[in-house]
Length: 271
Image (cartoon, rainbow, N blue to C red; front, top):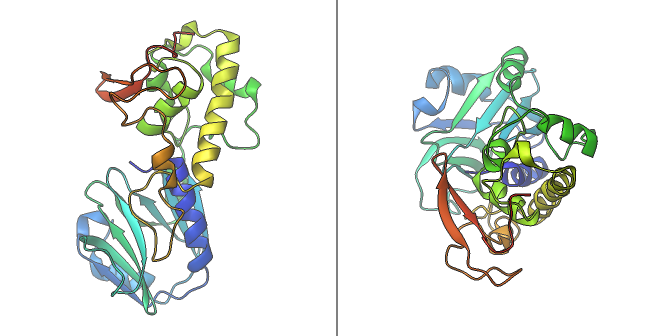
């Protein structure tokens, strides 16, 4: 599932190509991906312009000139591609938004969605999300406060969008590795030093991953050599059976609360 770095990478790329470009066409191949009848959705968008692209957690918000917003959540398997009909990948699309010859293709929206909302509706949809750790207002002290009184496994905390927004399976494992903590480490038993280490690890992993395009499997457009570069930089995620690059142990895969977990048992600990 695309997480904060992937969606921030998309936000930056979309902002370079779509701002103030008039929408000239809309195709909906799966009506369940939108929140109204196809005809109404298309009529509302054709002629509109995107004036700002915002990311919040794992969501993108396309701000339209009339104040309404398109809320995108790619969920599991969702992808974006921008280009001409001749350049489009051989994949099914659920929604297509045209900007002249170029088209923004929304793919893999089996569980994801693209909803047209009012300002009030979009704010309500984002209202339950927790803070983001890359926010300049997030300090080590505020982070420690977020953890105070929390219980349970570290990974479960990291992927809880109402506590910390934007982190999913991949980066939760990478962050735990960077912090030298087991994904199963109990939050209530973390020492102040462990909490400080975790804070720095979250910021480092998310920043590094964002700067090199996250781990998406497909370029955003023809000639895009940035998107997906972090896939080869993952230290533990999807590396079961491989040697740990830090200590020489072997990466293990297991499950925790129904989620797959990757970690090194040699260099990751309870605190």
